[in-house]
Amino acid sequence: MTPLIKVALQIGGGILVIFIIGLISHIVFNKLYKRNNGIHLKFFRSLIDVVLITISIYYILSFFDFTKDVSTVILQSSTLIIAIATFAAQQALSNVISGFSISITKPYNVGDKIKVLNGSNIIAEGIIMDVTIRHTVIRTFDGQSAIVPNNVMDNSVIVNTNYTANVGNFLEVEIAYDSDVDKACSIIKKLCIKHDLTLNEAKMKVLINRYTPNGVVLKTTVWTETLDDNFQACSDIRKQIIEEFAKNNIKIPYNTITISNMN
Image 1 (cartoon, rainbow, N blue to C red):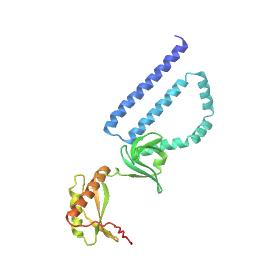
Image 2: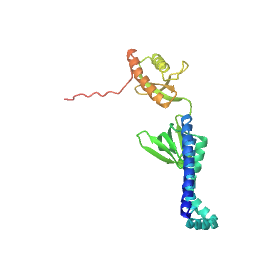
Image 3: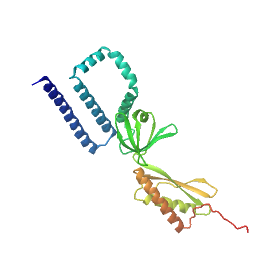
Image 4: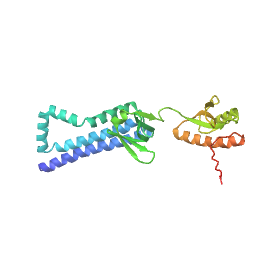
């Protein structure tokens, strides 16, 4: 067996072993995803892929004399090289460290609806799709993908509608001053309680929030399990309120314009 064939077999065998390890890793993670599609699993799978690719490249280069000489020079100047590499890659390392922090603390998870705030600015808003060692992928509500570095995510305020068990959303309705306020409050309360998606109980309250030039604003909170359920429930209840108010002679005020002919 010639030295060239021997080296080729060694390289091929090593790459095959790394490939099998990567394949097993993907199979294991895919099974874990079915139980828990958490961001820590996404992050560590991405990290393992990067480590395996790095090992593969180093393994292949170790068989060539030129790369061995380069490795010797690098080792002899290791302190300087490490300092330069650390400075050059500080942004990338910051993203990796932030990725570790996010995967451990889990301020959000895959499938969560979040809003990323930096001060008063909204950096991104949408649904978490993936988390890698460098960035977080957010699918925005217009169908695009926002690729946000992990260090930005780690240093921003995350508004997560899925972080707590239930979601509450204010529901406001304005009625005319000559309408029956007690009856209007009773109708709103009844509709909120009986809706299939709501979690409202009999002890919920409908309160007078404020006065306006047109009437009285009534306010309550609609509680549901998820944000999507809340959107649907509030929409249904608003529609039912219009129908019930009309049956009970409760007026919802609105501005009108009268145009007169001066001729």
